Image (cartoon, rainbow, N blue to C red; front, side, top):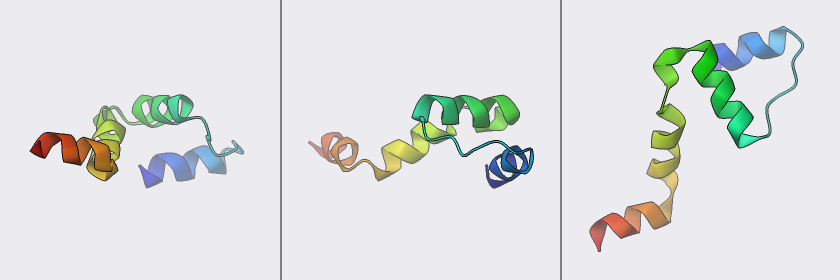
Amino acid sequence: MTKVLYHDQCQGNQPQLNVNDFVNLIEYKDPKLQGFFNVLYNAMNSKEKNQKWF
């Protein structure tokens, strides 16, 4: 993911602040990252963690 973001910014593009645009960018530039953002988000989302246990 860092490679994708690095190369995108080296091309003069601004950082993506919109979540949907960010996900589309990383998944388009590196198809191996499809679904990665959701996994990362769910791992850090305390509500999601708590619901799994109850």
